[in-house]
Length: 310
Image (cartoon, rainbow, N blue to C red; front, side, top):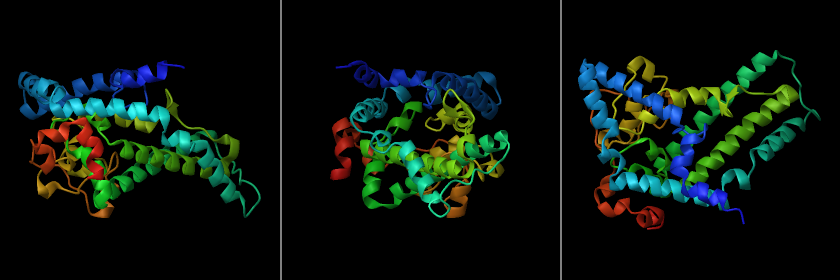
């Protein structure tokens, strides 16, 4: 029996820092520090005051060692162990979805179109399509998890976080982890299948270390500040197109006036079209969590896992 995958799953909070496809890849974590300090210094109009604010908002032991943060780590490990046994990509491979989509599109003509276009154009269009369709699929599933009574019980595990740090992105119930994995397979497989039908063997994408370059830019430029106490808004004009860390913090807000807003991950145009866009305002210092998160037991692993079934 190969014990290495199990050991890697147990050490997932550390292993993830060396995986480029993960948001907490250590270069992105390191890059979030000068960005965060710069944001805090700009808001305080002082580098010294900015450093103090950043330390309080991002480096405080209360953010990293609270009961809420400890549950983030536990769920990260549990989900890693479960994925060794069953995960969406192993049950439904992306290549199978892509081949199925291509086959369906080929039925009327008996083959692909094999459109001739410059390779740089195909590569750029495929990269952009994967990014946009992936982001739209995340928005739709995220919104559904808030609007469905039972799915909200699953997603509530994530929203019960009362203190946030970059690892809070992994604070999800195993069912939600599976659903988002399935979403990724279906979205990526569909886009790949359509492009294989259109362009055939000319297909390739702009990847760096196996990561879509647009997704890499998102992870590098402040994504780790989304789950933090560093308040960084982009301004209303930019936030009409891109979700800022402050907007996602409003999404996690305990205040009822902020509920069911800002479902987007990268692009905010989906929220704007859906009427759920809330730009960052002067509500700095929002309190995170839901009613049940005030109860310490909600930060216990057993309660988090059983929450959807109660």
